[in-house]
Length: 74
Image (cartoon, rainbow, N blue to C red; front, side, top):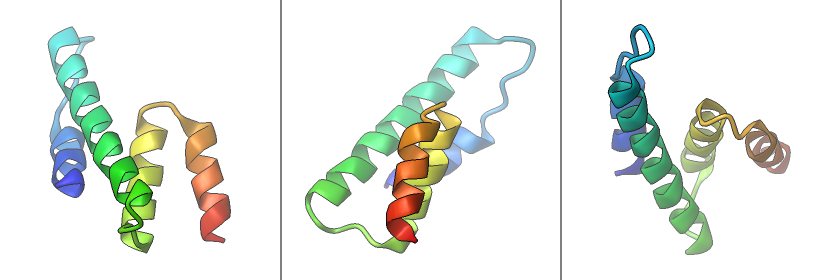
């Protein structure tokens, strides 16, 4: 479900500062991040979930968290 949310958010086009589209995209990315974090907390996350988390966090501007996850994967 988190991957579906992330994919849907990535498909959304934000044109000319359209705040509604930007808000919807951000909300979907945040929901995906929350679901991925829940997977990690439950111990049910694998490499695919980790890479999706890195991508989502990077898109949200949370590069430090994305880099930390990449370090853990290495």
